[in-house]
Amino acid sequence: MSGKDVIIALDFPTGTETMAFLDKFQGQTQKPFVKIGMELFYAEGPQMVREIKARGHKIFLDLKLHDIPNTVKRAMSVLSNLDVDMVNVHASGACDMMAGALEGLTRADGTRPLLIAVTQLTSTDAETLKRDLLIDTPMADTVMHYAQNANKSGLDGVVCSPLEAAIVKEGCGADFMTITPGIRFAGGDVGDQKRIMTPEKAAVSGCDYIVMGRPITQAPDPVAAYTQAMQEFVGV
Image (tube, rainbow, N blue to C red):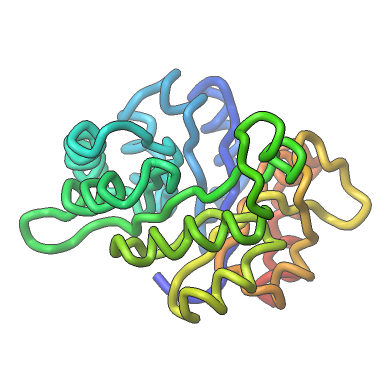
């Protein structure tokens, strides 16, 4: 995969609601790239992934694995059979865990989904970093260090806030991907996100993929909202 894209977060509690939402895009020439997170995956299981893939959608399976290296390696070997396009781990699991994830994800023929690492959640701000996690290092430095560890471990990119995408590109190279949640339309509700940006600004801030949930899924016209996001971010 290459080029910019908008990923819709399918933050629904049931498969029925998910499919009803995706039905709105049935007439579209290109099916949206979608993200399946913990809520939907834990509710519906791997079959939900297979059904959405069969509809022609690219899938980011967002389970944020974080455990000892061998456990993550074995879990990734299972996920590699689901034919998803992107999976992730927490970068705070450290280099050995990320290397294990990459090894487990890679199939016998050498193919694999993209593997990215979460740096810091966009709901975490500098105050939370210091108060709750006892990390005194500035947010930008923490994100950069995690990104460099992911790059060194052979991963394809990181999840970071759009505010840090440019420095990640600067420190890890133009080909190292940045996947950025915390995207809101101008004037929209920010919800529980703290480090946010509009799609239009994200387009020139080093973001390769933006992830949008409620601004699209809860919009009066989700197809129109998705089209707006694509126009602002990708230019199509």
